Length: 291
Image (cartoon, rainbow, N blue to C red; front, side, top):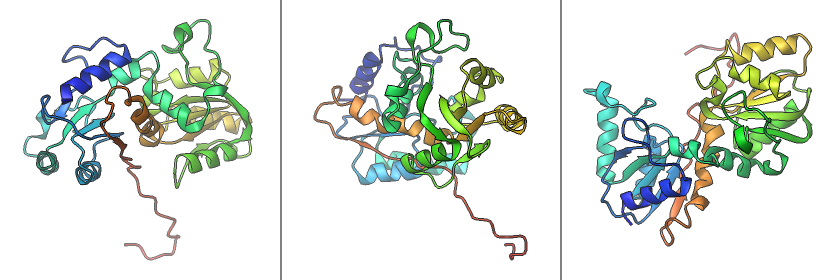
């Protein structure tokens, strides 16, 4: 199959009409539409390390959820003369791999592929709460899940331990009493926890769905975190748990491997973990030698 044939089949399976050029970031970022594909990789982001690992495994097509070229639209005009862009593009060109971004259509499908992967990774599909009768937040309408779960009772610390183990994380940020009781959990992966264009959406979401904890991707410290910290300091049972954009959405790309089986029968598909972008250093102490 060619890159174009595979992408056309992916778009058809989502059930979303192909979005016109200029109205979607789902575009070919490198390579050729006519290239023959013998091996596919899925990943959260086609980082330099992912591109190198893909080449080592003989991958012809990389399906990435997030940008290759550092902005939401993957615009490269501003990168003229940039050393990072030049070196990365030279690397990609040497490998001969094609890179296609699968973002908008993945989220817009009747079953959001990122949420699907999150549920498969956590095993929470059986705990999904019914969406509200009237959608006031822009998702959850007409029976589409809105990312709310009634999980078996635990604590914020217990939930943190769960994600550290299941999502292979060294550090999980929280706000709230670690021993607070948790049952009703909302999930806003990726940029959803920034409000999707409306800063107060996560707070309204938490209130209207009567949530104990919000599991977040990205955060802005003076919006949702400030709201939840004030709630906790007032003695209310509220908390947030921050996975980060990459860890919260990577399961969707990991589980995409199985979703692709009937589209590319006989073509190997591998998952390449883009991994967290941060390295965490322990406290060096107030009197330790500074470098």
